[in-house]
Length: 285
Image (cartoon, rainbow, N blue to C red; front, side, top):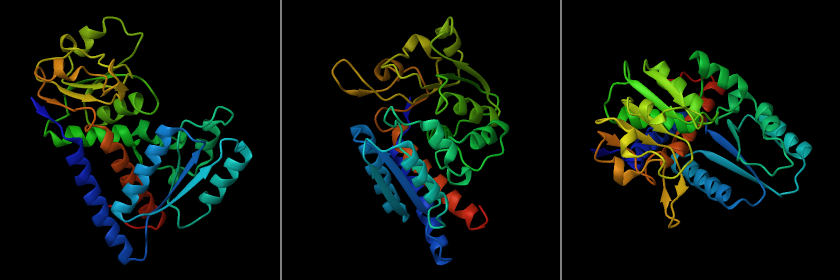
């Protein structure tokens, strides 16, 4: 069993982005990311801080718009419109969840698809479906980087995704399919789940239930990717996979923390760089 070190893979992605950013700056282009956060959700505050740090690390220009809890939909929409029109802002990200009186779908649909570095806009979702995309959703893209880091060939493998969310499960299945895996999506209503998961050469758990995947659900020698971020009975951070129980059965496994988590923000940096290149007509290498 080998542990896939998300911090190392993430650092390699950021180093690559930083190097390309330097090359863009020589041409007078600095990638710019605007992050909008509404209200005081503590988890969102942490994420936004981490995104700001990552921008600094790779050499981006970043702006944070911290709006009060009682911001109206019209005010939020107006800010998105303003950012859409600014040439120095290449990526716009609205931190979810929004307070309940605001419509996140309306905000996502309002962001110019070419600045939608989360890849949540229906235009970008459709592009991922047909395999002709500019951006990939950050978490599934990070998972693919982690799988590639193992050296395991995806083509021809049986891949099972547990979870069908729009943010992880569905796009994850598409990315695996684009790399010629045979993919099955499972979820809370799937019958005989363990019979399906234990056939997987690549198993991605994104169901949001602590230590849900146990050793009897995993094929010997599988690659196991844990997207979950939960707390166990002692309040300790853990994933959707029972790491201690599963680790000796698989060939590769991601830990929680230190697996998929660090990748998500690194892929956001990658998307912002891609957006800056597209908007400035720079060849994407």
